[in-house]
Image (cartoon, rainbow, N blue to C red; front, top):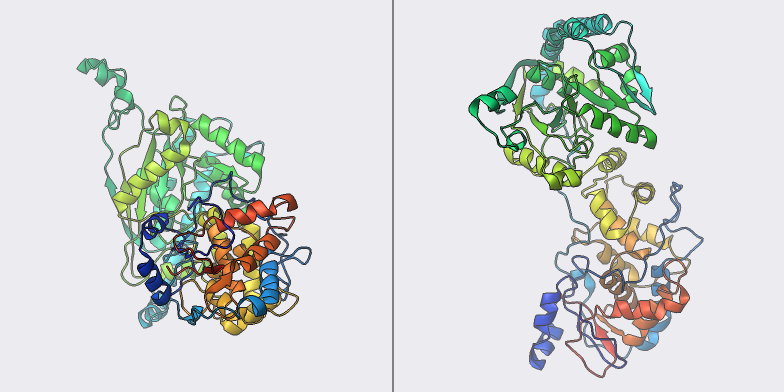
Length: 615
């Protein structure tokens, strides 16, 4: 940013907000170049956020109430006015006197070139699978539904019965122990019980065949495990030999499998990794399924109530105990993504498997297909997934077991770094991109998909840039759905005008079109949910100083001449930052000056006007 203080009587010609280097370069332009720029360039709103230090920036407005609104409810609570209310009110009062003296620029904001919003657009959604009903898919449904489907259905029922039967035999007399909400066994199964459970692997294979997996390809890249005896016989006295890749003396006790794309993933990995039969970690709601509790004991799995903080903390402790290679018991398999995805990218890894600081065994699951995408997300979920899987001639799966990943001291100190490292290795091996989507993104996607609304962003990115929490995203989603009257997933000008008019007690005059263009950051002629959220975040006083200054300029420039009197903009910002939720009254002048500091000073004159951004 330009650190010069705002001076009375000076006029500024800001460069592109997100590019301080460009501002520095432009400061060296000659007066003739500046005049030429004033006459020929086209205004475009800010492209990205501007870095503002915490010490200098005004504190953000407090988050809005999180209660769900009625369909016609104002997205801003009536108990307070947002900074944008004051900006528009002030600009309405001052426009007739201050704007009539300037006609230096006549172009409007509606002709702007394509712009970028504050929030990064993520074009690929990891929770989406359209699974279209093509003519070929309909043919398979009818033909195989009358021929192969009945056989597969009987095989699936038989496989389920056999698995439960073997589980009952192996776990007879045992039950899960409730350790502060985390359900697990107190002691590992004896070898005799494990042998009684082992034949269930063939029943599992029958179940996988019933959903179309005729052949499961296994690619094992693991290196042989080095024992203490082999080290002694080879004369290797290096004390670090057991901590290097390929030099493990014990198989990793943690198995991380990704992408997690179908309900059959656990059983596919078990078939590829047996023996031994790995334990799993899952939601405690699974136990309500018929035979679920018996199978949970036989597999020695761990179950957690994801909505209970004590249960999650207890699960971390149990995982740390079970990760000790000296303890007897099967390895633990975890799907660190925590949600089903379409397998086209790796989303954020949770740190549960990496907190113990022990070596982990990465396992990749891939489902090559030509016509039908078998991933269990989007429109291909629930009972429909079983039906469509059973009416395919064949489904394919490749299980790739990668080399074990051993943490260094940095990974032990920071499990998140270790998780990202392992995710990077798996992404490189599978040639997949990575994103920061998480459980919240999956939840929001499912809620938005019911109304045909696209969520082309990451909740984490939205939270970091705009200080918007999940409750507000859900509440604003309800507002967006209520004003999207034609249910096309975007807001046109009329729909946008309806929701903006509800935000203000009076008319906002000619600012409506410029506000629409300000929200429509990609120039598509409509406002998406992402653009709607980032616009409302600005209205509620969030974001950086540059974005707030840009919004103040747009709502003050009522005639679209791209020039605003300095005093008008100053009074608007004073009113905006005078709100109790934004900053205490004694600091409103400092807050205004902080915003005005982002306006570069390369085009000064004595006319008293600030010319809008032309980048």
